[in-house]
Length: 376
Image (cartoon, rainbow, N blue to C red):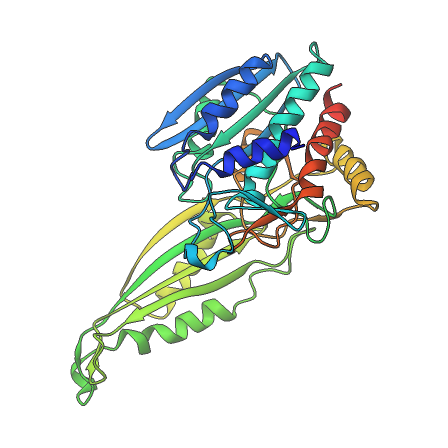
């Protein structure tokens, strides 16, 4: 007999909700939550669907945060089964989004239904926030919803994100913060010419290399509490016409900084541009601020999560700020304490993405235990 959470996860995987298309996932979930007594608000922003579902009133406000969009599956012939037709094999549920993060979203909804049935008059506000723009540019999703919340004074005290964060077993890692992300597209201008006459040209590659080397080699800091050191990585370099006898007139370089709370995006931009100017480059640069770092200090949320995860994993979880980014970076600036708890992340974004059935079945109990600990 198919369990409640497995059945719902399958229904979500069947909907090919590649960013920003929600493909009907949120309508399905909103209908279930309305039947459970939640008030549901659909927030369509641009091409993105967002769902805000609440139960109860007043404080504290506890939000479960997730996304219904998924990354493209890649070559379908590389999958052992259709990525958008859920299939159970060898104790695992396969399909795009099984781990990232339709399994967690299904577990959220089942946990919410169970909790409000057991505690219809619970204190505070219990909420679910979903977007279909987490895997893409994240412009019209939680970023804009958070801005709307700020304008209307919506309070959030605690936020639990269901991103796949565990390493080897469910609950072995508790994410207590994330690094900030800052991207740049740098264009260095030179003068095109013949390689035999370098005196009549200005090679932007030669001009830029010392500055790029300095940026890449710099030690930005030594880390911050549980954060690793800030890192700058060159990700794309392009120049030239394709001919080996032409000095290019322009060089384009893309790089990204993952940074800890020692820095703000504005300070990093200033430091990088100071290096570029010091090397006398004729350049233009476009910055994209993906999100500032956040860190949840010791308090009720971390204590509750540590206790619950230790019960499920059999040992105290590792408490980490590693990994990439999540939509919690938009909720934390509202004053919320944020953590991330989810299934093992070994297969996310890969061919044959999957979640272990044992983990999926345990997730509603884990999330419900957190709700019990914080709101019951």
